Length: 347
Image (cartoon, rainbow, N blue to C red; front, top):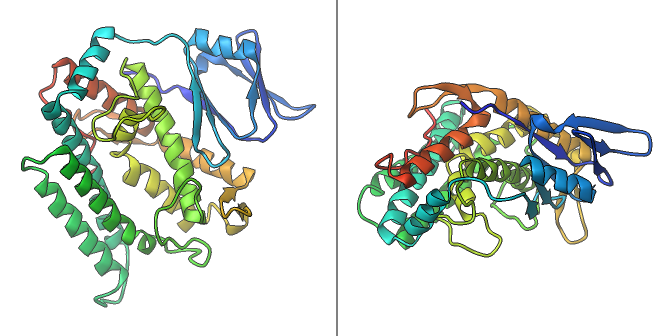
């Protein structure tokens, strides 16, 4: 079992990072610094106006610690890493399967089954916890109807379908899911109302939270894929584009709803984030304050420490280890050790 190493998130604007011996030093202002031994870290993620010295960059590359830069909204900018690790034979087989239409469809379909099944489970759980007085157009009814549609979609994935059809069904399922997302927000509705998914940049508080947490999740999955020797850029469900971590986005789909979305809903409904922690720029982009980002990061770290039993392996593990375990299962399938890739399905 792989130990759950830490990710250092630096979101204080104007901070800079340097090397001192075997430590990463974070300089927050003229008099304040924090030190982190590099051996306890797996990656460093910098948000917005955060800089790193050249010696530190080389140090991170030498120690295999990825250094990732995101803008202040959480959008990916660049990732710096040392020499590629992992088995070249595994990566070559990964590329072969990506060029094999039938193999691609099988992997993409299984990942979609995981995504849509987990989205359905989130809606069903919300419906059980929601009271709408029995009205046909109430929140519980809307959530139940959307969950049924997702359940029917999962069943439909059992028949032979082209990759384009699979992508279309994924889009339809996502629309039905987000159409009822606002029903799962039960507190602070005046300031946290969801109408549709928007990004680049997000234009409301809920989408700002979703985009931020999705960025954290993508970074964790990229690290997990690289850790087993897979190329995060070569995927099966998402189309390949320069600079796009297609495989990380593929695997992320299994974790979006039950991990990222549920965390955002908890932050809002438990009032762990407040309306005054968000601001809107002249361009219409919604930004989070430093304190709000810290609250989200703390909740993210705490959630990753929670434990559950893996539905396929039957082993108890920290949630933060799940991307690493799914990456290993995918690598085993690509090598031919598993007949099919078993997606993570929340139960």
